[in-house]
Amino acid sequence: MTITIHEKDLRAAQQVWDYLVLNRPVRPCSAAIGLGSHDLGVAATAVGHYHAGLFPLVVFTGGNSPTTKDRFPRGEAVHYQEHAIARGVPADAVLVEPRAVNTGQNITYTRALLDEWGPAVDSVMLICKPYMERRAYATCRKLWPEVAVQCASERTGLEDYLVAIGDQKLVMDMLAGELQRIQEYPRLGFATEQQVPAAVRRAYDHLVRAGFDSRLVKS
Image (cartoon, rainbow, N blue to C red; front, side, top):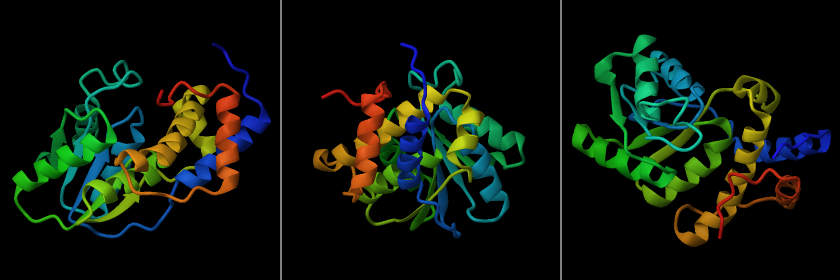
């Protein structure tokens, strides 16, 4: 279904984006975890932070999803690994976890891989799509509460991100899907509770009513 995107839709998307993007300073940590998605900016951000000396190791995690199987046919984590090595990250500083198909698996499978890797990991940097920062953080706090966690993403605004991805409908569907998960996943045991302001809830309701619903979890 083709949807015409109006200015009020973009305003609602901006409210949701501003809530989901944590936009906090980054600091050195034991390891980074690059969460697989359709966004190659995750790998690019990991490369930049590795070269800045913020961590000695990055794990790219992710298999495929309906939105990535054509873009990354060898799997999200494998394509991220190739991107990082081609840009100067040593091969022995990159691990690949190629099986995860959701954020919970990204965290749990990577934790197991890091346990096998050897050196103790007491802090991690989750590198993800900008609008996934809050849910990634909440998921890690639930599933790996012992580790100190921070989030990082490509520093960009919504307008520029829409241009970079090249599919406004997809991104706005994703924003609605993220906000739904933020609200629903705590009661399912998948993530810690996050306070959602009333204005953000109204923006989410607007996006769903306007038809940006392809990434919603069906009950």
